[in-house]
Image 1 (cartoon, rainbow, N blue to C red):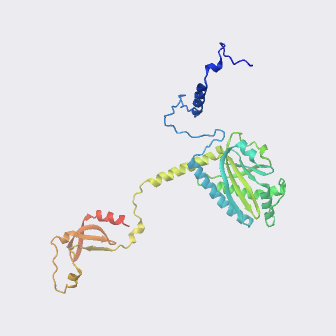
Image 2: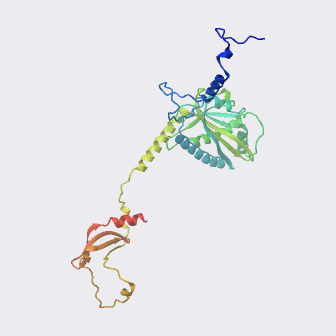
Length: 349
């Protein structure tokens, strides 16, 4: 028989831990499978402390806040809308364009995801630093070239690189895409883009560091029976100044819109006719009493009725005054502004 396991001092290990001890250790290990959280000073946080934990992917960090990403998405949706209309006019054929994705990704991972073969255009925005990438699927590019040469825009099934003639023709469309993309940011900063190179394999690109974060817009383009993808990618450090300016403009708009605007008189108001009348609120009477009034009857009024004259502007009580005579004219002297009745009537409008 095999020897029983022995400890350092020759003790039998089966006698050191009983089955109940092993079960207790196993249950403790299972219950202790919780995330251990430490504060910034190295102190371990207790389980009963109120802690809000958010996951963070250090391999794919997010540099845009939720509000910034929403505004950037709106800008890109507008870009896609206007670009689709411009390309339809340029090609004289319906060019469908819709957003597939808008996300951030490290440069190395983005270049590895670019299909091969493809047509890549490298461009630079003069007012910003960094190099942008415009990736157009070759099938879509050849279909556009076919349309530019007078074809019906049928999808080309070949899997090949573009020829020099096809590249020269497709660059007219690429310039239009870059011009429209820069136009969407003109309220924050005037931008001008230029083509600085081209490539047909994403693995050979070295325009940014491997860990640089790219803002990638993926679009699905449809021309005739061809439906392929286009991508525009910019390093975050390139687009960051424009995003910061956009945020400043948004904050400035929100702050000014919240300020109370003082009323201002416009000269055009001077010629507006407003109905004006002065009246007395003497007493109330029934319809029977009113119908019984005949010429020559005398109606008794309160002695202070002239001091309780109400001046109405556009059927709204505005002032209280006193009736008097100025030569041969009956006049009303304004003594008081009506506040309560005015506020009630304005609230009901």
